[in-house]
Length: 214
Image 1 (cartoon, rainbow, N blue to C red):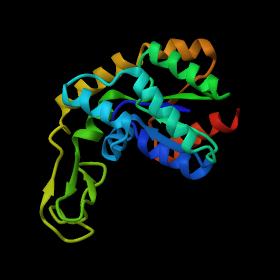
Image 2 (spheres, rainbow, N blue to C red):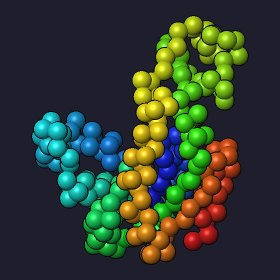
Image 3 (tube, rainbow, N blue to C red):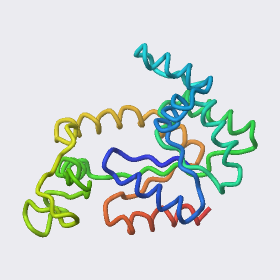
């Protein structure tokens, strides 16, 4: 399964729900790269050399990592791909690798959200500097203004990239990166688009309907 959605759409939470309910494994290309580099594997060494040189990690290396992870999780009921593919060439290479294993992409689910709502959701986030509890300026305020509900700290922090300008830039990049693969999966009949606005439970119910519907 491929789960698509812009930054702030709640993709990570939905992936966790899918993992818990269906016994799937989430494969994030970013996390896989970091793990390979840390392990010192041959793939990791190649990836580190490229990243240290400021070069993009080539598609075939990513495909090899995904292939290895799938082999390691044969007992899982399926996998969720996060961050890959982003181009038609990557989608085709992924299909070829899966085909060699007798597997295929069953579902590509795109979570559509109102971009203004996403900007508000992300740019309003902040967290406790001491315990890490998360809050939001309007959606999840502290019970006492300026005091953490969990530990009582009065020190808070915001991520430097959680501002409206950066968020809009990330949303634009997402649209540009994702747009090319949508027609590819639509032609294959594996693309579904859902409304990503609502509570996390409501959105998950929409995803469940697709997954359990075949």
